[in-house]
Image (cartoon, rainbow, N blue to C red; front, side, top):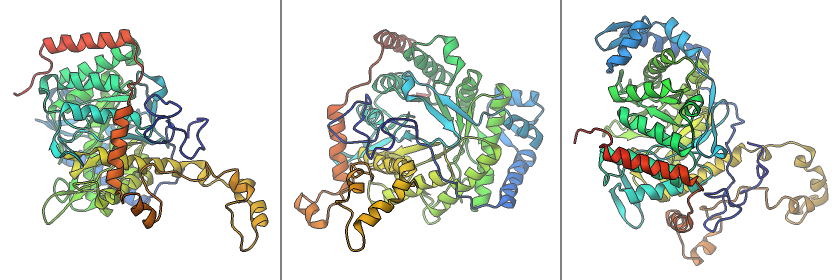
Amino acid sequence: MTEDSGRRRRAGGRAGNKQRAGTAAIDQMPWRIPVNPDRPTEPLDMDGVMAIHRGCMRILREIGIEFLNPAAVDILRKAGCRVDGTNVRMDEDFVTDMLRTVPESFTITPRNPAREVTIGGRHMVFVNVSSPPNAWDLERGKRSGDFATFREFMKLTQYFNCIHVAGGYPVEPIDIHPSIRHLDCLYEKLTLTDKVVHAYSLGAERVEDVMEMTRIAGGLTHEEFSARPRMYTNINSVSPLKHDYPMLDGAMRLARRSQPVIVTPFTLAGAMAPVTMSGAVALSLAEGLSAIALLQYINPGCPVAIGTFTSNVDMKSGAPAFGTPEYMRATQMTGQLARHYRLPLRSSGVCAANVPDGQAMWETSNSLWAAVQSRTNIVYHAAGWLEGGLIASPEKFVMDCEVLQMIQRYFEEATFATTEEDIALDAIREVGPGGHYFGCQHTQDRYSTAFYAPFVSDWRNFEAWEGDGAVWTPERAHRIYKAILAEFEAPDMNSDHQEELRRFVAKRKQEGGAPTDF
């Protein structure tokens, strides 16, 4: 953990959207960047790691990757790669040389330096749900995303201390025209939160606008913005074996200004990748490493991370499945290869369930614990994801944050300390055989901080729960979500920076924003 004075506290006071001493909605843990103390789960022996590595290198050397961006192709041709139209083949020596320049970790500093995050090593940060086109809650059911719902999710993102990054749009606000959507969304994100933000790599204008808005919000000069990471993007390959034009364009723009790029192939075994996990992982790595090699050639040492989104499909329906045993193993295996290449790792907290029910939570928990086991550094979609990424749910967001806090508590040294006081021989001697520990001094000195205290889970017995209205977990989460919105206060922001940001948005809207196909 960080050296926060509340590091060893059970629930840490109620540091909310302003890291305040208390809030009315819940008692939550203080802001901290979790550090994973565990050894990673490694299903592969060294022969297995090298077999996947060799398969990955053969894909790059013998089959190649399609780069559907002429500028990227020209750069890779100059780098000595073999080019045939849009197909680019890379030798292992070139890829290895490019990987040597990648930093093993990097720090992103948002407009509030207290919300700085480190990506890499044993650090593990959690990102809100990103990009669903629909929303679902207990009152309104399933519906298309809109701007009002987007703002609700941004408030939840800011409120919860266990969410460290304000990633993509938690729900797509389709009531705002695509040409100006990024301007409105980033303005809200930069004013409703003070956490690290993200740019979608969907055309030059969007990426350039988000970089400029992040610079303005932080009161930075252009030189200060480019001197260190301030925001980031995530790009996906078009599996199998393709990188598209706009994502490469955005990634290259950020790399030139030393802003982080996470490269995450979306490989579903049995559909967009081989049905075997080792084959799917090898394909995913080849796609990811090819883009990372490009970015390192453009700007050696620019911050990057490899992402894994390798799961399987339901072979009966073809639908994506998440939180499966195969998903967990693919994440663990990719973690081993990421450490082999000395790359920071991204994975996700995902499920295929349609509502925040038992299936949703066991699949998401499987995904999140696979992230822990793989020593993932940044976990996308860590709170709020449903229906394979087609739905964002505030109830699910709240329920997932309970799990994230439990993971953070699990990491704390207090859960596995072995000092003389922790071994507690004096207490064992005092209580003796047949006694109990409720009243002994050892317990009295520690009872308020000894164990994790939930804010959604109900640990009472059935009769007490039933007598209090028999409220199911999603209903409790719904009440918490409503209470958070009712008490929410936006974080402080320099008024001059906010006014400049407002003027920039108005100017870019007048200019038409970003071109679209509409």
